[in-house]
Length: 364
Ligand code: SF4
Image 1 (cartoon, rainbow, N blue to C red):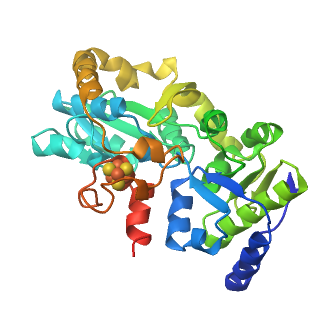
Image 2 (tube, rainbow, N blue to C red; image 1 turned 180 degrees about the horizontal axis):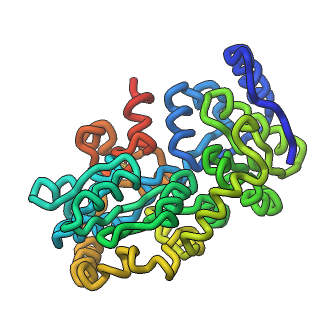
């Protein structure tokens, strides 16, 4: 792995230099990031407008709210409507399922609550022993260690977790088979946990990788590193976020995740089922797994919703946007029927969604 120190004392000057270096790359390049926070920085600072047209930066499936599939959202809604207390992060409340959102279910009387962490959810269970609390857990490797730590500490008997947790590197496996892309910017916060090693197999396949942080100069440095590799005809994993990411990641967090969860196949919105890309509680914790504990409560209704979904006309192109094959500008509802105050799809709900970022930062 090549090492360069990206920490800069004069970011404006450094960025000007980076933009010049990037512009000197003579060929076309398609670079994909897989991180909602990267997209937000790119949109906020107009990074695409600083690059020559021949260098494209695509947005991949990097927003945890956006990649959560309809099945999981519908399941959480059904659990709430069947009398359980469903708690989750704020953004998930507004994501539309097949017929409604968790917010809508709450308006109809279901017990749905917003929390900032799994600790808040456990506290709610401890304070309400007469209620069955289900924590709808979403996120990537960045949030999974917190959930794992709480599971290992011990959970109240009236508490369970419905997991829709995802690992990011397996998504790249699928993208490289399906998308015309030359190189990847890997998410720095994920790599803080996982390290850079999980990305090495993609470098071996011929894709340059740069792990980048979240300042505009971090992303520009990542792009420059990728173009340098392409110019040299090499493909390595480079670290443009040395101030936070170590090659080996965070071994304590990795151990905690391994002890609490098994890696399983998982469904991603827009990408379908990706092998070994999700987490399920280990068998020894299955009494806290809402998908095991309450399957009989929601299964029939979920099957009915699946049938309804098949017949529904889908106008939202979020799934296509998540694979880098479209942008919000390709959606006729962007800025018109679909806005952050009235989101039609998940990409407009979360502030890590591409539609939300473009609505906020990329309109005239
Ligand atoms: S603008 Fe709205 S409807 Fe269109 S793709 Fe984005 S979230 Fe979906």
